[in-house]
Length: 313
Image 1 (cartoon, helix red, strand yellow):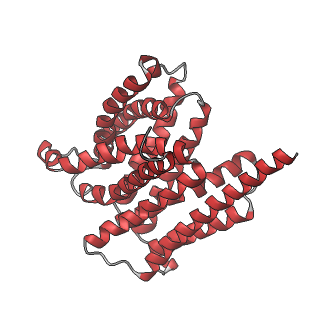
Image 2: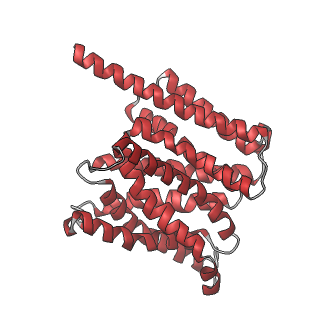
């Protein structure tokens, strides 16, 4: 029997993952001065795949590598998720501060509400609508530093838009996991990521042929070994494993709150690097966190009422 209760282990794993993802943005920002987004994504995911396959084989056996006739669907979902969040978000990071980019992933639960509402043709409940409005307002405050008119021009808006599209793509990818309810999160992640790497590689070849990017030298890549090690081992392998396990331990309502640590970690790293955020930026982060907390507790209350009604009914 473990010394640590399940909720504590789950919380520690989710906190470690969220902090690793928050630190990912400051780690990638200096890389972009020397390495193109396609190469960063290929190294990050390409080295993660064999590690995840080995873990999947050890835990679930060779049968877990069987796509069960879903190879084309898995390829599309993997491309959507890992190219979207793994490449588009990096392109967006090129033109914005790392801590600003890190605020957008905290909107994932709120974006999920919008996507599900459109699919089911049921408008979000008032608390969810308020949470969405607070979250968007928070991101706008962070990006504009209190001057919303600044969002109408400049590269900051373009960068945020790319990160937002990448995060939204990840939401679609995550929701699609429900199509394979008998699969573990590890299996879904490993198979889709493996196929997505092929897409990223193909897109890099096209970009090279068009002259849109230039491959970095081997010496440049070697000089950034610690950064790539962080992206592969912490942000990817550990992140995927711990997030799935932590969410199973705590449940979505509580587990999703840990996504707040992503922007908090990114801003903390920036502070250690000497950046002093404005009051508007801090207020924006606080709004995003408040939005997520409001939505989480509103969802939990709604679920509790539904369970009570089913018992009484």
